[in-house]
Length: 367
Ligand SMILES: [Zn+2]
Ligand SMILES: [Zn+2]
Image (cartoon, rainbow, N blue to C red; front, top):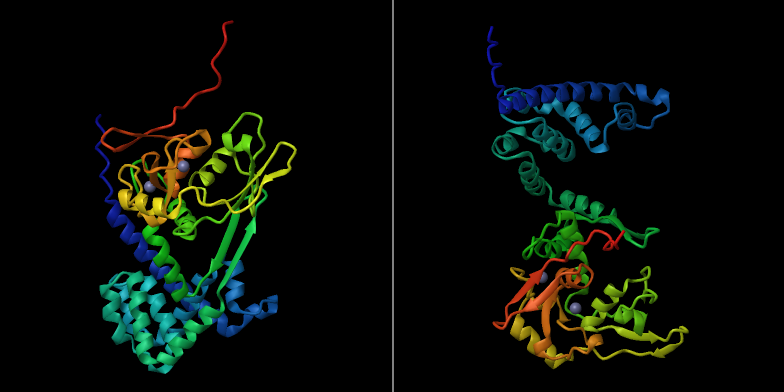
């Protein structure tokens, strides 16, 4: 006997139904959480607040707990909003913002002013709109809130065992916006072959931002052998970094706005001092004017963020002149020196790139 085909499930319908159920459960949870807070039962177990008790015992993060407590405590002022949520006109995320706002602004809260916005906008956008409402009600309180956030700013940097820099921190909204304003344009995908994740692009943007437009005044210490990439040479040294590969030393030295300290093999300093930039200012101007942006195919990073790259490295006798130089952004400069990509400039002055050849192990000798 032929079995009938099972009916296809409409996943979209299923998801919205499930979300409606979860939202209603969240509301129920919020009601009980507020009751629990009133009863102060948590204090017998040694917790300072109901929020702490719920966080540990219900395995929730603080933000979610505060939402529940606010919604539960403010329910009496949110009758129309609750109804709208039950009718799935808004979600629990909207209700949480309404509850937190009612809690923050106090007696003057009026849900009818916000509910139409909640119905119209996504939870993220609604949260944004609500900030205007809060400001309009009490600009001073809003400012005080922003000031409190600014007081909580912090930035921690540390070095991991493998030499990587670890960064974590919190910035107030204005400080955060300033940083994003600088990083976001630099973090967009750029050029052919850009397979970086958003996190990688942001990390590159940070480095690029700090090293742009001025000589990377890095003190690099390396032997001539390292600079030439000869077999058996030691790694280079740079302040705040673990030893650098010779490919990295070559890249930093390519634009050569570095303090150059060369050591001979007995580690005696044989050349100390601020090396004049390899590409002097008038040549740099001419290079910027000619190339205007990174010369990697389809990369449009402006000259301000670029290094001057010697097509034939000066350490191998390449001249520092316009014919032998091209602008490359930091990432593409790295792809050439450390990543093994090759750049070729055609007779039409077009730059083409060749991916590194992948080799699997050493060629095998005859058996
Ligand atoms: Zn270079
Ligand atoms: Zn580029």
